[in-house]
Image (cartoon, rainbow over all chains, first blue to last red; front, top):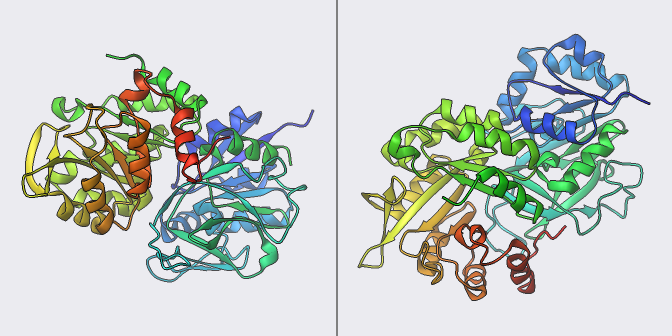
Length: 215
Length: 225
C-alpha cells in the first residue's frame, strides 16, 4: 500500500496545526511540517498553506530559500497544493500593500476583491463565508481533487484579495460574489491552488484534502 | 454552568454549524485566558472556523490562540483601552484574523454606547464612532451584540444593526436576543451577514438545522451539506 506522506511547508505564516490535523484525519500516514529544503525536495506531495499578507508570505519563503526549493519540487512533477495565501503566492504579482512579485508559477495577478457588485450593491470585504463552487467552462472535475465535490457543496472562504488568472484554462472553479466570478480553484499541471480552506470546510473540505493525498 | 464546551462544539459541528465562537466571559475580569487548551482540543475534531474571544490583550495571546487552532480572535475590552492593538494584530496576522467584538447598550437619544468587560463597564464611546475606528485600524469583521436584547428572547436590536450596517464595509455577525423564527427573518431582512446563537442552542430551544431552514426559505444561500 502506498505510503501517504504529505509535507507542509512552514514559512512562519499560517495555521499549520489545523492543516496538519486535517491531513491526519484524511488518512495521511505521515505529515511533515518543515522549512528544511532537503525535506521539501524529497517530499511526495507538498502543501503550501498561509494566511495573511502577500508580502510577508514572499518574505517568509525567500528568506529561507523556500522559493527555490518549491521551483525544484515543481519540476519533479509531484502534486503541489497551495491553500489561501499559498494559492495567491503562485501568482506573478500582487497589489496588496504595494507591488510585490510572487512565485509566478501560475500566471496571474492578485488584487483586492471588488467592493461593489454587478448591480452596484455594496460588497463586504473581506469575503467571509461559505459558498458553493461553480465549474469553469463546463470543465470536468473528474481527474482533479474536486471529483467528489457536488455543485451544492459549500466550502469556507475568508479573504480580501483574489487571484485573477491570465489564462482561463488555469481556472478550475469559481464562486459567485455579487455577480463577480472569483477564482476558487486554479490548476496547472501538477500545481493546484484553492482559495478556500479545505481544513475548515467540514466534510466537503476534508474530502478534497483526501483526494489530494491520494493523487 | 451548561457543560463542557468541547462537547457542545463537536455536536454543533456535526449538526452543521458554519462557525463556532468561543467567548471566555470572565477572562477580562480575572486577567487570565484558559482558552488555549479548549481551542486545541476542539480543533482536534472540529473542521469549521473558530473565533475566540475573552481577555485577549496582546500579540502573544493572539499567537497562542491561532497556533492552537483558532482562525480569528474577537477583541473588545483590550482594544477599547488601547485601539492600536487592533492594527498591531491586523499587521501581524491580517485583517481577516481579527473580529471587533462590540457590546452595545441603547441610550435615550437613539445612540448606542460601547460597553466592555462583558457588558459590565461603560466606556462613554459611541458605537458607530467605535466601529468606524476599529475598521480603519484593521478589523476585518464585527461581532455586534445588543446588551439590552441578549437573553431576552424578544428579538435582535434591529435599529442597532441598521445603524452599524450603514457604516460598515466589513461583515457583521449579529448576536443577542433570538427567540423565534421571525427574529431570524428580521435579521436577514435588515442585512445581517451572519447571525450568532447561544442560549437557544445550548438549552435546546431550537436546533441548527431548523434555523438554517428558516434562512433557506428566505432564499439565503446557506450550507446544508
